[in-house]
Length: 466
Image 1 (cartoon, helix red, strand yellow):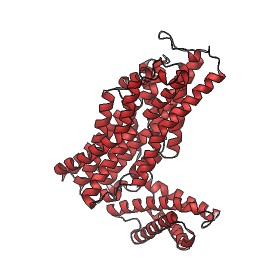
Image 2 (cartoon, helix red, strand yellow):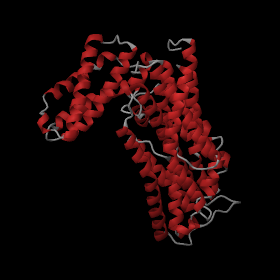
Image 3 (cartoon, rainbow, N blue to C red):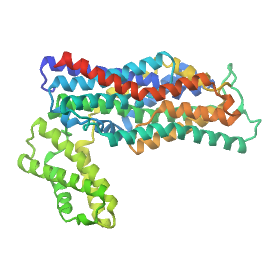
Image 4 (cartoon, rainbow, N blue to C red):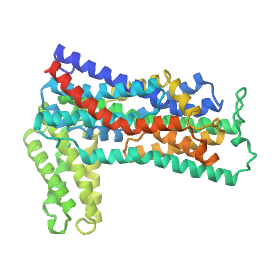
């Protein structure tokens, strides 16, 4: 398989199995949030709710693109990792996965809603930090800027969930009669009226699909990392694309950069200019000499520089109109649109595998988190209005985050949204402090614990694998 020797093939399959397990756990750990409202409002029976949610998670991964997946790939210095001994590469991949799986399982066992996104990002930072210090003696390989952007989105999303759900609930109380059935406690023996039931099913479906399109891509990104490390010749670049067509799109960008008046650039833009210019020159030099016949390590090199050029040119475009004209920006966007499919892609079988893992996971082990979300955040039973408000906010926030290629926490958005609706109903006294304390504690501890765990696991695994 992929030209791998039997021993390396075993390690590869272990990594793929670990990724499948991570995404499987993600299914019942995070997606339980989506089904909690329809179950606790007696809108759907549990078995129907989890099948609906699992199916839409599957579709979310299949149709959600790869933008968030690329964000995960960018968190790891793939070119440096792929150039190391295979034992070192496996050590960093498994350290990340084992740390994330362990924390997710632990918080699930105790019924604590915890973010799989936080868990994964913390584990990646810890693994990359250990690798970077081990190989280079410093932590410069950790993409701190990218980690900061993702961390900011993870921290901000719960505040958004709480605030908007709080305001939406207040608005409903103003516009809808207080005697309306939407503010009633659900009848445990009968489903809600048809129109309420329809709204709740639609919001549950929205959260499930959005979760698949965002969280599912994290598994796709992890699988791509493993594939590029083990078989860069097959997966560093999209083999379905004609590699001879890369250079005709790189050269116009390189020529335009040579004519830029660097005196007009700010300090940050100047750094981006040199980064983009260097990447374009390196690509031009390598592709001129090799055309289609590239060695495995060269394909990884080309991928890295295509991504670097794309990222740097985006920042340079901020110099419009002082440096670039509108036509030049349009031309650049046309070239990069043609280049993206070469390095921003995922094999169909990878997307299908992650879709299945997330979908099946959704249908198993969901109950612990559902109980916490449905009955332990607020002191009162979840009402129809609270369920619909929190899920509408969650689906919208996660969908927008996917659009901007940012991983966010389904758990934190939805649980904070439910807390917001509870406060809007009867004030802070309506919250169960013990549950909120556990959620907040998990929120605070997840990053440092996962960083430390992955850091330690890397060194332990390296002893056995190298």
